[in-house]
Length: 214
Image (cartoon, rainbow, N blue to C red; front, side):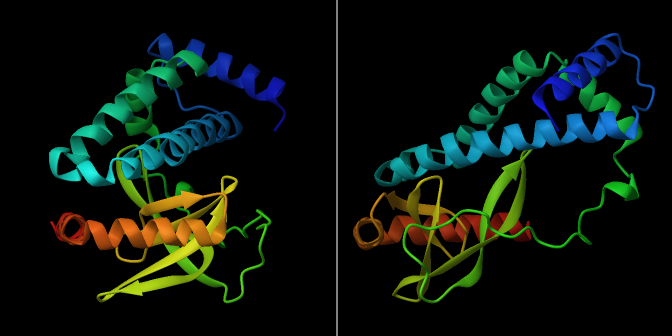
């Protein structure tokens, strides 16, 4: 959809939602708004919070992941609201009334999208791995094509090229460990971080697994 058409739809939806009119939107209008909101939140998480969090690797003991994620989410919502012009609290009420249990929005039957990014270096052993992002504070696993990077004391790590950089993530939580423009450097940095902070890493994995089973 062209930006001009998208912006026109956002203005129409903003007028309705901000006036507390929760009449169900036209499918094309709701689809546009829902996709715009989701893409914005995911992009902010992947390009801002995710890299920042792993830059704090050495300080994880002094940080609360959920608290920091909540701060990031609140900031993202404020930026989103300013951009699209839609009162997000009102939109949440609209969504709960009209789409919370809408079976047409189930995406489990969709085929996974193919990776469009062209790695600088061709993957020698491409496999499908999972990375985890948060959409509206709900952890979501997404598929990505990558290859095994290294194994350390019972834990596996993989590397993929996205966002213009080589990124090493762990299989256990799907989270980023290190990144660099160079393939070998990214793996080297990841190994050093894991070896130096292994106890912290294991604690992070245990917390993540406990959260999934809670």
